[in-house]
Image (tube, rainbow over all chains, first blue to last red; front, side, top):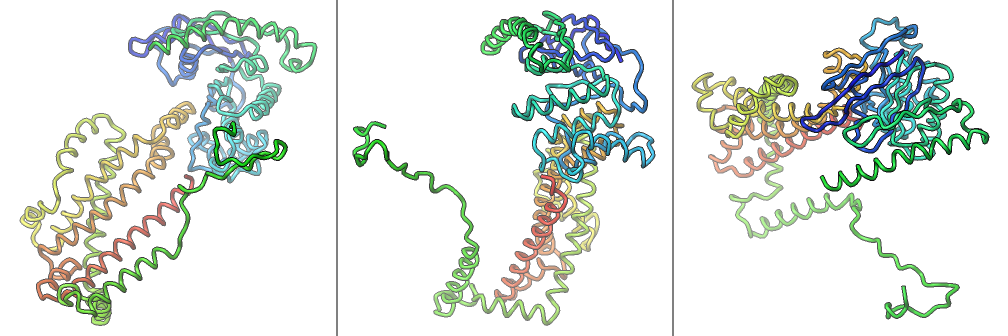
Length: 257
Length: 275
């Protein structure tokens, strides 16, 4: 599924957070959106997913959805957004409840998600009994259960420690090796963008405008290899250079506000 | 730390160093399982002793033994059950009516902006009225019998339930509702699967408050006009100067409050085990 964003502007009262965003996501592309705090990254994602109404501009999707897709545009949240009173499998079942599925298919979708995220033995556990990493795996399994055509990831690893973040990045790589799901990946972490994305969109400080779109030429599977490091370091320098100035200025503006 | 700043420091060889003095004690809660029991025992012993030694008049402050005997008498002549039954029935009916109505209105106010705009000023106006002041009016409306007592208790329970319910709905994490919307869950499912269970802790906390209000109101209402009921029983004993029987009634009320609290704690533990 492709995503077409054109001339998107968003204001909260008289605060402009996004200003004239034009963006196209190709089929199966993973686009990372980075930028300083408060630049409207999450708002952009909310608008793309239809849970924030934009002030002006248009956002459209086109293209095929996979077989059995129940919710083409699906979120993975920073805070996991699990129901604390439901156990792991019931949290996944939640997003299937309003669809007319056979019991067998419901089971199959839940089991498949649990298996792929290594959660099978935790199916009866409550969220409070799980680590942050496991909770996010439940969030991913829940997203997979609806067979999405596009994933919107809102800083999915920001609430996790560094080691867990590494492990979950591997999970994401595995996911995208198997399914060519288009993804918009919002983060403020350069390493995540460099490991996972095809292109990186750098947003300016508020009001968020696109500073630059940087393509990472190295295929995802080869990015851990030594031969890829020179190129990645180069991209990283460029991205950091773009981000640093924006972040510094954003920081001062927040201090003044 | 330089030794010159620490006059008590014993000079030691640099290789061995100085032991670090423990200074992290205190300010932690320790369990003393017998302390509460001991406190009760001491209180009862002092009270009993004071009465036996003639320090307190048995008419105005009867000893615990006399209160115990009066309670035993209430059990054996059946008056305990007779009065308790009457009070429990009034609490049950009044509380259930007030709670059902309060939750209905509270949910409406929690979910619909219009209902809230209309409801908040009304609730604010009615909530502070001491509900027992309305009993005479309810007696005129419904007669001296049971309905006026149900109405007083129900009315007293209704407003705190409304407030607890709509505040509890405000406390339901918005991120969960947005998550459900992003997965396309219909409005009714969001209500049933997220708003209702998410509001449950606040609603149950409200039950605790309304249960104690119901207990206060039932006693007050029974003192104003009832043949049976713990409130009527206590008042009657007072009129007859039977202070031991009076205190036995008060003891029953204390135990009743304790029992209701225990039931609610169990309910919370069972329903909110996810917290």
